[in-house]
Amino acid sequence: MSILNATHNSQAADDSVAVIELKTVFAEQQRAFAADRYPSLEVRRERIEKIIGMLVSNRERIHQALMSDFGNHPKGASDLIEMLGIVGRVQYVLDHLEEWMQPQPREIDSAALGNARAFIRQEPKGVVGNIVPWNFPIDISIGPLAEMLAAGNRVIIKPSEYAPACAKLVAEMVAATFDRNLVHVVVGGLELSREFSATPWDHLLYTGSPNVGRQVMAAAAKNLTPVTLELGGKCPALLTPGSVTAQNVESVIGTKVIKNGQMCVSVDYVMVPRGDVPAFIAQARGFLDRSAPHYSKSSECTGIISERHMARISDMLKEAEARQVSIVALEDDPQIDLTTRRMPISLVIDPPADLRLMQEEIFGPIMPVLPYDDLDDAIAHINAGERPLGLYVFGDDEALTASVLQQTSSGGAAVNTCALQSGLPSLAFGGSGNSGMGRHHGVEGFREFSNPRGIVVRGDQGDHIDAFYAPYSKASAMVDAALGG
Image 1 (cartoon, rainbow, N blue to C red):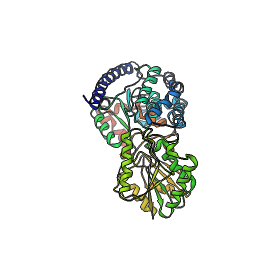
Image 2 (image 1 turned 60 degrees about the vertical axis):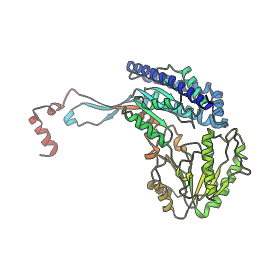
Image 3 (image 1 turned 120 degrees about the horizontal axis):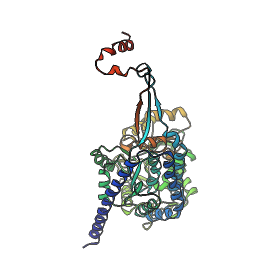
Image 4 (image 1 turned 90 degrees about the vertical axis):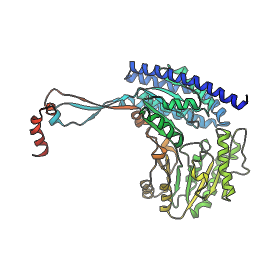
């Protein structure tokens, strides 16, 4: 038996065990939810607070797992994004949960319903699934848990098999912190992913590519499972005339540095006034020289997640080279470290539209720079593509940047910065069209994982509810009065 076949058979066997585990725990969580359909505020708080202690006590293990999966991963980024960001999200939920759980009154027609009351109560959906991508294996495993538990749900998490060390760590952290009938992690590959999507969840969150998102949604549709899809796309940065400044270029390139471009809200391409392209290139090189000298050889450069992903990115560059497109490295003597999979950042200047890097989400350290002559043409170019998850507009003219936002569509947006719309605990995060549907973070996340149950309580005086019962002749006076008859 070849090593490849042995590995495949081993993974299939592991997946079979994981599928059984998934079905068993899913049934356990369903029973547990049936016995406790509306946890109190105090119980929800207690559950959510455990997340902070779980993360803090595993700080070093998180560093090590990320380093193992990515080949190299800056510790500062691990702390800032994969831990502190989650803690801030959890604390925001704790600060506002009591307010979110309050019934929301709705108006009634007192002439017909007297002193009846109507309100919306956000109630738990039940058992929620979370399919996690490899690029933020801690953050997207644990971050949404804050709102899922806030809504009163039980949760099963499926980490990515492309980040096995992080998947194992998340499973161990969660098992040590929560009863499995409340929160559990199942680890496996393709067979488990398919079974996970087909499970009759009360809600399913998937973060990943649009192509896989379609498959997940199709599987969920068989059970009428509601889905939240966070799908990425080609997020553009548009520098309006006069906005190619050191600060703005730093924002664009600095965002690309995060995870070395392996981020769904990273800048996929940047549009620059044609005459300002040389200045953009100079500012980009200057920023990287100052902030991360010898970037691809430094500890600041996150490794590409796998050899397969690295080969895909390299092939994009090779195609551009073969077409004699100008490629500008942002550091001297750029090199690829095959051991840690660290790659330099490259600008690709004015690439043809049919290149692979202009057709696919890049998800790596390549930045196409698209010159434009007319701002309306730049806006038309953005609108000709699928709606991105994020759109970034730069310029000092507030009316102009507001106009660009008004003429475009995206899941989220930012002005004179990039990607911040995805990290604020108070701001709903999600896509539109090809970049996804649904929202999490903040009150919108709490509501996403809740059932907005409409409730009417009949009063004790002044109503005419019996007008809706036969015979309807007694309703004539009420209808005449309403219609002015």
